[in-house]
Length: 256
Ligand SMILES: C[S@@+](CC[C@H](N)C(=O)[O-])C[C@H]1O[C@@H](n2cnc3c(N)ncnc32)[C@H](O)[C@@H]1O
Image (tube, rainbow, N blue to C red; front, side, top):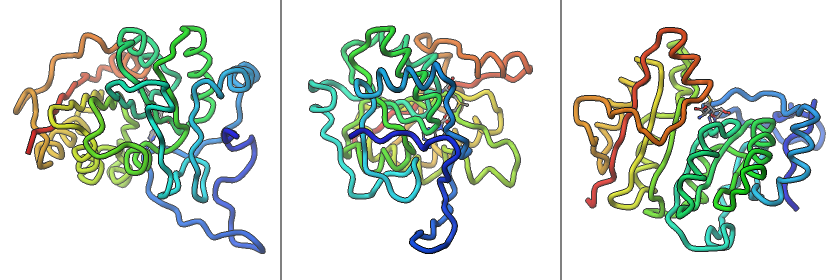
């Protein structure tokens, strides 16, 4: 049975009480929002989740992944192919065209926001794509438990939540721990592509990735040119409209 996103109104973090486990609040890179779906999202979920969404055992919260969870990726995709992971595709505005443009890769997406996952599976079905699978859970735990070491050809992290306030910087997805994890999951020669419209986050990404053993910049000391295959999304447009510059970064896993 595929796990259903947390139903509207249910609580991800039950408080202490009879029969209820106390849940440790972890620092995560996303806002825990209501999973309430609009009727069209609910319909898309019901019609298409079995085609695209991979069930994984969770811990206490609906976006977590049990440390013992494993995925048989060739079985999940129905074939062996180079693996690309996208972290946080939202509704798939860029994922869907990029998956269509790369039919030769298996594309695994991690997205925590259930209504976005529902829209994404609807869009994947309309586009008749067969090379995408979605895990509706925290990408960091997904990379830890579901992606084998040196098993990843590319990782895409486009417009991660910026957490602009200094007291929230610890919630930013791209930090030393995630960077070390990504380096361990990329195969030698594998590529991590990132983009953000928040200047200080771009600088932080560059500092962190420059300091990560086994990752080297394709454009040392500078920014990557905008990746031509990356479609413009609402998030990027919103940044441009607000006068923010968009920075792309491309790092490669060394053979060391
Ligand atoms: C600002 S949106 C960008 C969406 C898309 N990449 C784009 O460029 O249009 C960031 C997305 O990342 C998701 N997200 C944040 N942290 C995540 C995590 N650790 N695992 C999975 N998804 C995450 C959020 O739910 C949100 O949909």
